[in-house]
Length: 115
Image (cartoon, rainbow, N blue to C red; front, side):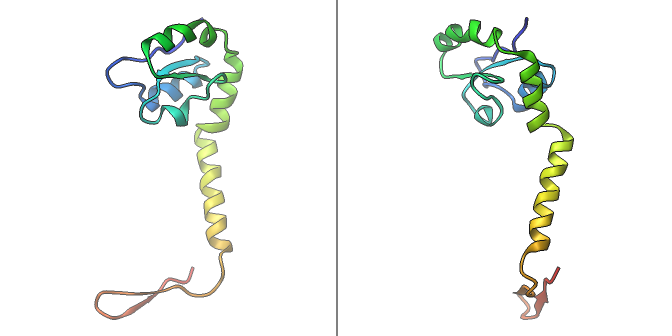
């Protein structure tokens, strides 16, 4: 069984970590940048703060259920999921009140921004 291991210079790169999860590979990464958004401790891997902590988590990360790692990837990071999120945003915008939204331009003219 393999795990994606962090580099010490820049921490994890989100694309690498979510790609690893898509390949059913648990991730062990330093808690930097977007790691907290990508790695779910105990589900898809572990985020750590030190080399010592990383070493202590190796057995745990290797014991994670690889099928569960893939399921969480599909629930969180696929293009299909992103499309569904955009559709929800668009539906909320459409459902907003029907009153026109008027914004003043720098030249004094008003813009009617009714959807």
